[in-house]
Length: 310
Ligand code: HEM
Image (cartoon, rainbow, N blue to C red; front, side, top):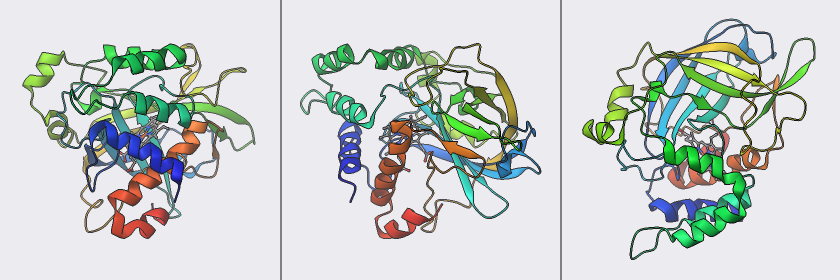
């Protein structure tokens, strides 16, 4: 058992309650099928980035660990993508609609989650503890400010999503570059004010996404320059960094083939493929451990299967 990952997942459960059978974070979401068409930018030898279109599964989600939370709640939104590669393997990318993260290390993630634990009597976190944490961790503030100032999206397909972590892409000539991923919606970015979002109902994002066949995202890589932090997801890179479009992800309709009859679907951000490597970012590397723990819990009888299957 991974004791530290258990502690982190317990701390996530303490924020929103433990909900059997559901993810410990991003518990509410909807699966869509899609097709990824690479633009052939030539920046990596990875199988899905050149040649024929590749089928994908995309899961759109709200950040909370409560699967019953209303879609209009103030939360981050996620887009997780799994490519089904021609050789039968898979590769995943897991992104959110924020430009940076709030923690630089798993230990900080745990400390901040514990600081936000709601008081059992009031149901509210102790703001003195939250303030004390933030006072000592100014690197968390850009994420918190972004989070507090963002309103619910009109649709999951009107958000831009970022990987935050960096990956090393190696091209056919052997040249390597550090990149971060970004999905930009062809529909444009659009958000609702809080009242309008509420008027659309508790399930408006889930109801909307299943009608969005044909909606698409441009996948971009943002290329690092010398000195850009590649192991720190709290640090945004300068806005002027070169961006290259590497493909187009089009939704084709609701995904009906996954997460039923015991199928365990796991999006793991360190599941890369030849031509792409992870950085040493401690948050990125730890996510795999936390997700595995969450997956083990939500699929208890299938735990062995979940540990090895995509
Ligand atoms: C130490 C940091 C983090 C921890 C402990 C953590 C924890 C978790 C856990 C436990 C899950 C549920 C996994 C499952 O049951 O399959 C999850 C899902 C998710 N996380 Fe994280 N996370 C972290 C960082 C991040 C970051 C940096 C991002 C975005 C770049 C992110 C985006 C997501 C998304 C989009 C999902 C939903 C994936 C899906 O649809 O299956 N997380 N996270």
